[in-house]
Every structure is written in structure tokens, then in C-alpha cells.
Image (cartoon, rainbow, N blue to C red):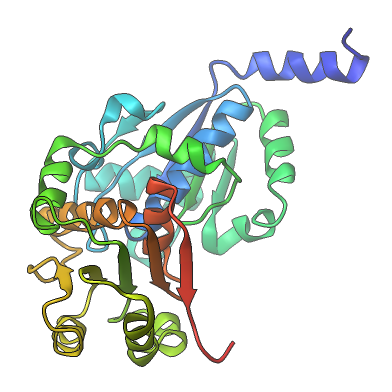
Amino acid sequence: MLLKGDFMYLCIYMSHKRQKIFIVPDGGIGNRLRAIASGIYLAENTGRKAVVIWHPDPLCNASLTDLFIPEAIPAEIISPSQCSFRLFYEQPRKRNLFITRLTAPLRFSRRYYDTVNLQPYLDNCHLLREETVRTKGDILIYSGQEFYDFPRSFFREIFKVSDAVRRRANEISGNGIKPEISIQIRRTDHTLSIGHSPVEAFMEIIDRVAPSPFYLATDDETVKSLISRHAPGRVVMNPSPAARNTPQGILDAVAELLVMSRTGTIYGSYASSFPEIASWLGDVPLKTVSTGL
């Protein structure tokens, strides 16, 4: 038997069947995937249709449908032109002359942006759900975070890697070699990972628990050389340099996620989404390597 409040909620839910949540994922591949999963799960929980606005940029310069099987993703996927993206979907900022402050309200009843107004909802996703249910019209969410909780099994259901990624993963891992653990060392521009997860800490892990072989994922060629010298003959890794600004580089990154997801344990860098995503893909334990916390 439906109570009065339940009936009202059901009526609101059904009224949203034709309304949409537009998810604009931001940042690198890991950040984008968790934002997409958040938005789609929020849409499913509130009776809305999910639309993913996928815009390649120097942090993730590849097509979503080249990386994952689109039929598995329960959302409409749109890749707008650069002009259209800047005019309607991008967060208001200097490079788009803040034009979306004017254009976005004409299209979306509510707009949420990571650096503007989404932060208060990160620890209270129920509030975001309630606002979504009560909102009439379409909603835009521009984010690179997990802004709405979702089961990790749901993540694995919607992100099925493409055949091209699977082939590349097999090539990288040596076509048959199955490392028991993976080590992910994030460097370059990630100051938190560099500060809290020094290379020396990973070397201690390698000396203590790493069998032969183990998989190394890193965005730093110097680290590849250093670890190779530290554990000669035991390291499996992608011979190509990490490159987020090319389609092949992003395809390689997703292939590395798949390789890591096939190992038994992942040792990852502090505050990096990359090992987290690999852990979700394979339902594999993740251990964050950090010091000074």
C-alpha cells in the first residue's frame, strides 16, 4: 500500500521520464569515468534519461566509443563541436568568455559545476537526488568526481572495454604473461601523489611482496628506468611513453587499466583516480602507498 508521500514521489518520478541529465565529464580518463557512472546512476535513480557530453581535450584526447563498447553504456553519447561545447556545455570560465552563464540557463533548469556549486553535494548525495527529483526540466552536471554514490558492480556493467583496448592490453602484458600484482606510480603534474607516495616507498613494496613478474604503470619515463634497474627482469610495462594528448596514448591508458584489473592486488599512488578505476574494473583489492599521513 502506497502512503501519500510515496504516491507523490512516484508521480514526480514518472513525470521525469522524458527529462534528462546531461553529464559533462572533466579531467583525465579516470575522473571522467567516475563522473559518468555517477551521472548515469543518478539518472536511473530519478527516472531521467542520461546524456553524456564527451569532449576530447589535452587531458583525455580520445573518443569514448573507441575505448568502451557504447551499447553497454545506458546513455546517449554526444560529441559536440568545439564551438558548441564552449557555447552551451563548458563550465563558465575565461576561455569561453563566461558565455555559459548566459546560455546554459536557457537550456538547463539546474547547472552543477565542480568548482562552483557541486562540492557541498559530494558528502550528501541524497540531497542531490532530492533536488533532481524536484527539478522540472533538464539538468547539467559538469564534473570529474564521484558526485553520486554507485555500486562498483554497476561500474563494471557499463564500462566494457573495446576490442582495440583488449588487444592492446594483451600486447602490453606480453600476450600470456599474468603479473600477480600491479604497481602504479603517478608523477608529472600530480603534486599530492609525488608528495605522499615517493618512489622509495614503492621500492620497499616491490622488495617485500612483488613476485616475478609484476606490472608497472607510470606516467614518468625516469621512473620506468629506475624501477627496471631496481628489479631487473621482473618488470612488465608499456614500452611506449604515457601521452594523454593523443588518441593512442589514451587507448594505451585504458589498456593499462585492464591489465591492472587482471592482477591480484593493486598498489597505487595517493589521490590518484587511475588505480581506483582499475580496482573497480576488476573487483581487485587496492592498497594506497603513502607516507607522512
